[in-house]
Length: 106
Image 1: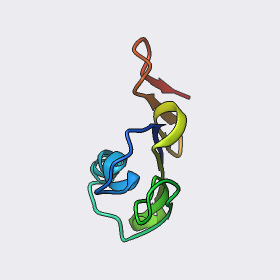
Image 2: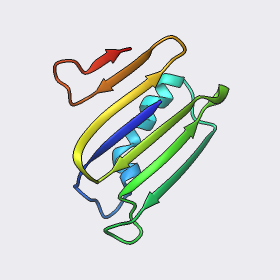
Image 3: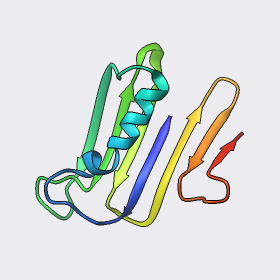
């Protein structure tokens, strides 16, 4: 699974981009898996305010080796709301900003 949630601001002063933007994605992936991850690693970068990560990459590992990757950022000039799930027989992509065809299958 891959989740990308980026835009240009608003930059918060009390939480990181991971907590602000990717909390929805963590909830979605846990719902997809019907479980919590067995491990999580994250790496952030503080570019504007010390101690507040405005760009974050995180990896969530679930049972059976299923992995989910998250990119959350307040410093992207383009707003992106994209989820991609790769299965053994098919792939699904959700672009939350595409009002005409938000869900596609490959």
